[in-house]
Image (cartoon, rainbow, N blue to C red):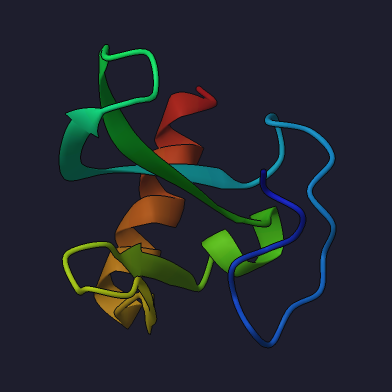
Length: 86
């Protein structure tokens, strides 16, 4: 269960899906559960709205890493947002 923003420098509590950005990673660990049914391991990570504007997650690493968005990507993102409001 998600309790707070994944950014270690932020303590924003997770309250609603509508705020921030949710990341899902399928770890690829498939196995049989106690019932004999195949199960997969899925992990969820959340960045609050404030952090999602400046960082993202690298889910390819063994342990997810918080990485800053490039200035160019932030500018493009804000430009796209303003374009959708027209």
